[in-house]
Length: 278
Image (cartoon, rainbow, N blue to C red; front, top):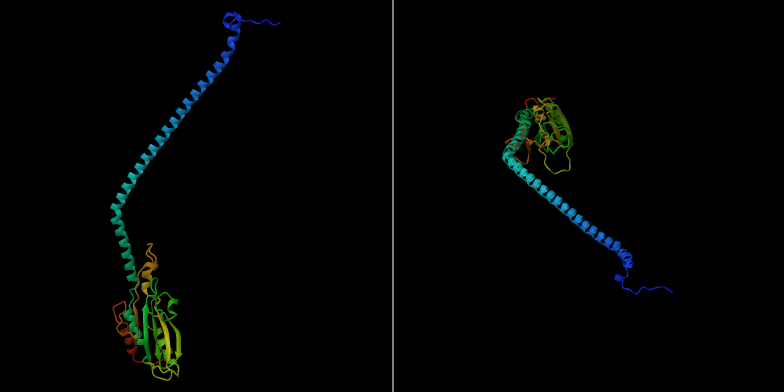
């Protein structure tokens, strides 16, 4: 049989001393885990506090930089506002230079040219339209003759009628001899319709109507219009047309302040003595 000790544990002598140490390692292990948890929580709190402090410092630094840049922008804006009158004055000066260049480019002796043309016109040729322009960039030119836009130079477009085709040929020859004329282009010379009931300003059987352009390619206005080293494009320079008019508008002034029809009438009615000779 197995012996059983019926005495309480505190009276058993050496037996309780051998059984008590078995529970101590488990209790120490539990207490050690709790200490680690507390230390981890404290470390996490310290790390979060450090992150918060760093983020707050970064935000404050950025805000300080923003305030500094804003102050610099305000200072620059005030300086620009003070210098704005000088920029406006420069723009005004550039605009005036362009205007002066345009006026210089349009400086052509239209009076002398029209006087010479009037003396060169034969008596049997009648002008119905006369248009003069510089033919420079920025101008529309004379839209009446298709040959006008072929050369960028001062030119006068003529339209009218003559008593015969030889009269048109004599007119071209006389125009070519005018001082300053470099080219005379005839775009058309057509005889009238015999069945037409519209009266013609020229006498003769079916008087031909013509259209011609007289070019002045050696004009000094072309050299004056050349760029002088600034950045202004030629198309920005205001260049006025000089002469424009038709026989139907006898009072319309041109851009030079003279009546274009009066000049055209003078060109048609003031032939050179002996100009009819070939």
